[in-house]
Length: 205
Image 1 (cartoon, rainbow, N blue to C red):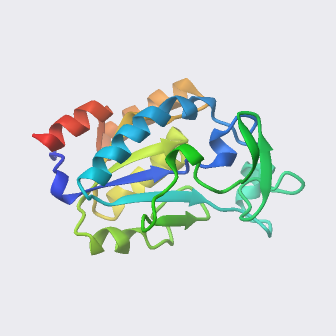
Image 2 (cartoon, helix red, strand yellow):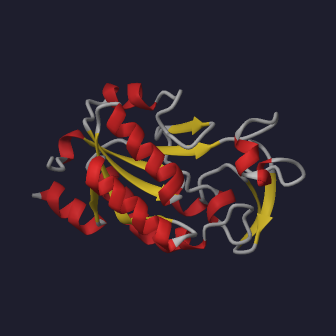
Image 3 (spheres, rainbow, N blue to C red):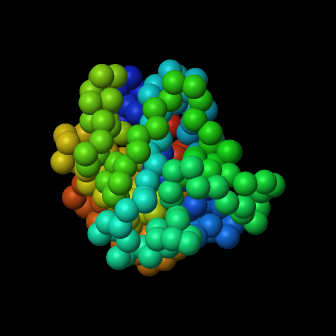
């Protein structure tokens, strides 16, 4: 079992975007809002220690792909996760770009946002090169949805040679039983499953 070391760790925040997190979003995951405070704690720690923070964003449209078959909300007229498509949500004033990271977790200038066209943050993206450029060998993974994009990104990290730790209280799902099963699978064969406090305490040691 690997140890979490501050000097070689990065935080990957998966798909904490308006069209997944906000009230009334087309692919709303209500439990994602319950992880915002934990995300803020992790972001503060990584920023204070000057360690890399990377946000992934799921991007769809404008032409049909295989993904449309599994998430019909992507298609018009809803246009879920289309860049530049703005919509209003039930928990915030005004319209927002539907693919943007939620205001509460807004990336700071210079923090990379990696756009992906599927579930896995490493598949056909610059994420691997980005992490290697910062001498990262271990990633803490947070975000939504646990059994889909979070799990696929954690598996992707494993296949790219990174030690992955999924932060159990900073990931979320609309299906509690799948959330639990996903974390169990990841912890058995792909990496570690830790709470935010466990991770931060270990990296401070």
